[in-house]
Length: 305
Ligand code: DON
Image (cartoon, rainbow, N blue to C red; front, side, top):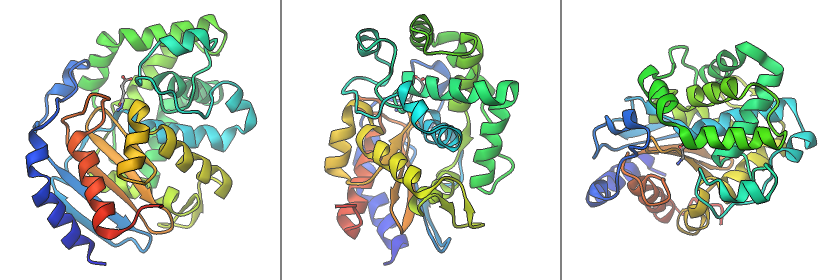
């Protein structure tokens, strides 16, 4: 298949959608972006790459980081982790507090904020003060790029304005579902969210999930096949919060979004894909990015269904 041609067609057809939606500004530093920007990258398991738009420009990965931290948590934990965080869609906003209260501080899944905070806490219990470095090294290694780092402005901006996440971590602490200091947990979580990557780097970093947990770059087993299946299943059912059903319906691939405007997705046994367009829909997922992925699976027939 001529993926380059497919990407170029998508880039043309997506233009009207790039003006729709709003960039995230509840983390003020996230609003400092080119609002109508667009990039899309594909990398297949033979490491052939295809790109359009600003595919080498880094942006804030935000919630996409939750896929990487959940992978690290599953490298270390099995069933015991699922006592602290579930595997059901929440049907609620990514930062909602409501369900968490009546479900006794156990988040529905690892991709809503509360679940990702528990995941990060589980890593802090093992890696202590080296946790963020460990997360960063992992991301650098799977994207084959030692230069990847985090954006200090975005980090401090979220630290200043992240009242809702502070509420989430404190509520979970009150239910004894946070093991470490709430300040360390939230600082590490905000740092992982502020990591900057391009669509080219992110698509490469996701390849192991298209390949049963094995990094095709160096054949390293990053996670066993069963756990890789679970991560993909959770991306399909929970990766877009209260729009997960809509994303599955329209795109038909496991995917994970971030409020920075990125979405990653995988076509199992074939390729990884990443799209960037910072204006978001009401549920906080890239509006044009979702449309671009819908166009991709419609044009290529490469959905999992
Ligand atoms: O915790 C937050 O609110 C952000 N750092 C991440 C949220 C996010 O990316 C939701 N995704 N679409």
